[in-house]
Image 1 (cartoon, helix red, strand yellow):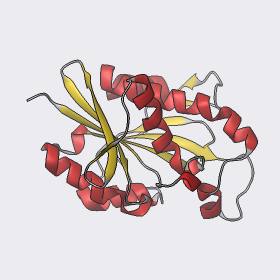
Image 2 (tube, one colour):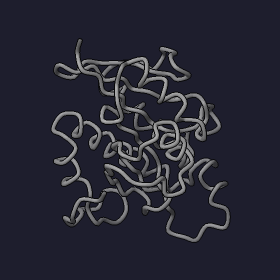
Image 3 (tube, helix red, strand yellow):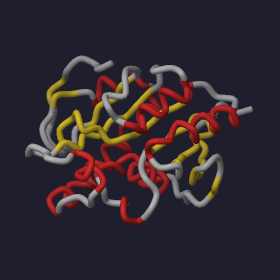
Length: 205
């Protein structure tokens, strides 16, 4: 049997959330589906999904439909169905602790207050799984972070969205093709807003 990778984007289902900062994970999975010419129209384990072949591996693209706070339930079911472990899992999600547009790969750690990641950790019982974190913190103080995450992006953010999602998709593809450590060295850099040429830094854990 071919080895399997589960590539999960976190977000909330429903058109009202499509362009919210909290749905960066869904947007990245959509971009990867486009690149690999597959449609996320299969329904399995409380999720929309599609799969494609990458070398000798089967890669599943997954968007849990359980809403963000229960994402771990869907992922746990996927791991059971495919006979996978946390080492076969790659989770893509927004991160309010990172500046807007910054991409960071993390191999382990706490949820940092992200309820979707918190659900995954609780469901799996471990903190060791690869994450592609997409910075969504704006350049101004937030009065209501929850409202900011769930509301549609501002016009200037929408203008940068395509570039950010492309970089997140590039990071996930590099993890799949060349391994997490090479991707970490490439993408974990000090940088400004999306598209800035970053300075090399040590890999974040």
